[in-house]
Length: 431
Image (spheres, rainbow, N blue to C red):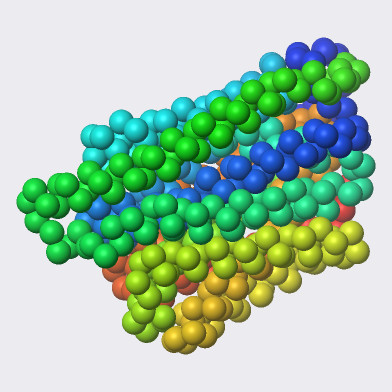
């Protein structure tokens, strides 16, 4: 343990009565954490359905449409460390309930956004929604690692991420039916004047109604979590940390891991955000918008299958080696996709979801090895790195506007190459 990060000469009790000691096994709480992964993964993936709809409604370029991801993932950068502070003050489960309430508020803000019909208001609602998701994710990642034996933390976090992938698989399909299917036969480009304004109002209302339904479900979930806020016994007094949480970045394994989270989220979100447009290209599959939208679950479904496989594989193979392997596979699939056409181009891009499957949990657990009582702070910093989803997708969209979608996807390819290098670097356990 690095003595420049922790002061071992003094101790303070950790506030809150639900701070877990590492290694506690509370099965019913693990179920609730799995539900949290399912919910925040599913709601995040709805952006891939929302982007083409808002792009059409407000006549946006690829780069402008990617501002949806910028508004959403900027919350990770701004909210993660404050959320980690809240965890230390009130505990994991209380913070989780608070985060779910903020998510519900963000969903409800889609009502005024739909009525006003201004793109910027939608971005504001998405930011609030993402602030709640960020808070929940800061809680969920270290909590699932702590609820069990330390030696199986890689596998357990990957298994939990499988529920995240289940959400990202089911939600886009439902979103395509609820958001893209209504008025699917009408195109904004063919309307003008009052007809265009009426169409935009109708479609915005459809989006708003979808998110109101989500808000009601989230309110119920927040109540259920709150009722279980005392389920974790109070641990022994914890070591008091000195210095700012960002000092953790001075540890190469952690700092490089946080950078790889930035690259991974950016690459995954950029590909997911452009999937509908990519599949609509005549040189790919030439699908209509709704049909292309129903293919998005194949991308996230690959991550679902891969995480169940990965939970088994990571108990038998070094996590660093597995990370390098899947990153190289993603790179190869991406290069095949951009250099081919038709079904081969489409399905090799969709298959990257399978390779993405274990990247986040494996990078997270590799970077977090040895953090001990500073796990919440480390989680906060790593969640800040998720801001890659706000930066790399707009850059990819800008490249698509300048050149084309295929060349733009070379940026995510660079991200995967760097992630593969980190896996090779971190293949040995932290000392």
